[in-house]
Length: 421
Ligand SMILES: [Zn+2]
Image 1: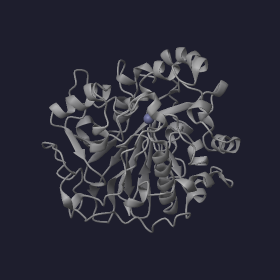
Image 2: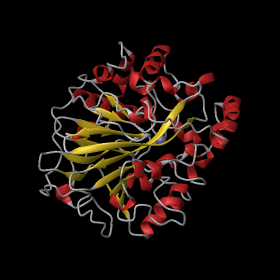
Image 3: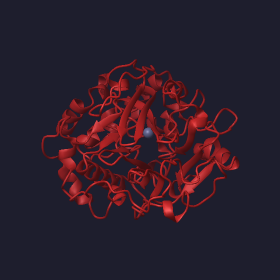
Image 4: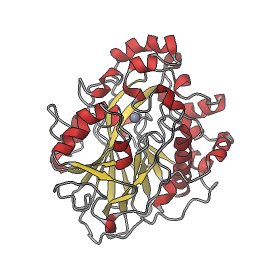
């Protein structure tokens, strides 16, 4: 049933209706669930690996990586996305890819002078990493597992433990009204209730930059995204580098060698920054770095993602290219960790479904970047490469996850976990 997280077909026309109805913080799931008959209990797609407590990407012993699905057909989830390659879109006017690479590119666009004014702030951002508190340390709607270190929050799903790791917090170099064109006043009002910290002064969008680690029974760790990176990383032109992911991992008790899988949801600068150490060596030396083939195929020549991360990881034998839904780990209880394509933000964007049986946690990358897209999933984000596909993907994911009462784990909302029911 992981296929239900895909974009589906022909759903776009329905998305507009998502603006209707009250949708407060307690009602995100109800707003989107049921309209398409979301699937039943989270039965993991594909065949069980039969590995019992053995976790990690299939064959994920740090061995040589190569092309193809992780671990072969038995570990492959059902394909879930069709038409994942977006055609020309509104974003095309900004260049096919990597439009979010810099303040300069943003300032050249419609945001104009207002953005230019914020560009100075972005160049010297006020990094405001919250101490232990509501945003960084309290899993909303999830069962708290006790006091956690600052910037670390934990949500459990069956045998799995999802650890939110706050890499940074900053101000987006574009007013929120321009970043989310077309959002209604009602949607903004609902979003403010869902994520009040996202609303900075003068129309600013305040956002977290977050990664997640999935602890599997038996010791494997799947890291989902690697943040904005150190000073001088490709994200430095607009994001509040350096991030704090290495410190957060240490605080959570996760050593680089513990990580056997790094999932890159997509190849925007704020999601791969800590993948490599200075000099290009893999920062997680035992890990396979899993990326969708469609994401690689869409990289423009000379893209920073290629030079900074993809090429060094490939040279080190650590790049693992998959095509479609892919099982990463399974447990004898029936739980599983599965990749699902969620295209639109980028052509090869992927999410991670952590299915613990009674609870699912969906680590959704940039499918939802602001609470206004929870308030109204039809609201586009300016930097989505294929806005129509991104909208269909978002709607479908929220419907499916909401129907299951899942917890949404997001990179950029100012709280790590959002219950959808
Ligand atoms: Zn992002």
